Length: 213
Image (cartoon, rainbow, N blue to C red; front, side, top):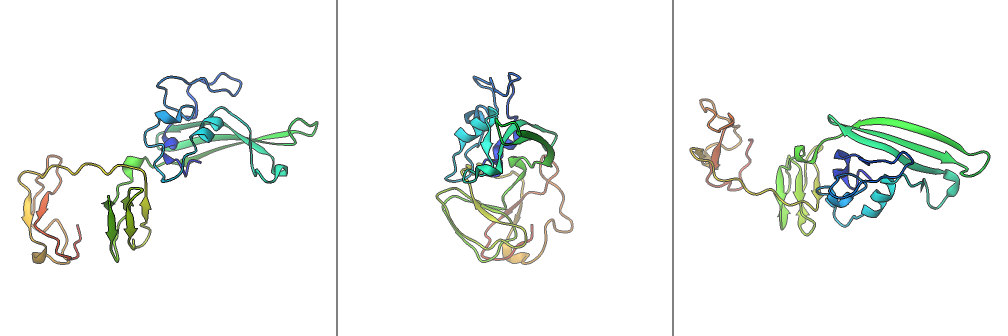
């Protein structure tokens, strides 16, 4: 569930539990109990399990395998995000309602990378056709991606809006791609010229040339 709706990993399962497994969150509270309040909750194309997220937040027992009841049930007991880590507590049970009923509990922590830290090397709004690229490629759900990301990079289609193109920086160093093919930036002698100490360049045209930025 978290992998399909990754935005929920940054928010608690419930802010106002009643002590009996029910979530009393209401209004503008941002939690799994009210997934519509979570930004980008539908970031994965063609996947909408908000009703299931709400059910899980309410502590409802779920079948481990809907096709095999002998596998038992599980339910979310608690989930919170803190300082880059997700803290998850899940309960499982076998033979519910029987004298032999048994309940176990699992408490785990795992790293969570916020969405804003997962910057794409290339955003695509309509289509992209590249042979090789050393960066992650993101496109919206209606885009066409024909790419070959290298190494551990990948191409993904998400229901996210491409960030606005930043304003052209004032005082940026003007470059021509043909003058530094297969060279790296910053060049020897260049000085940071951005407001936060970054190097700002304007390239007249890429011209299909390979650049290392």
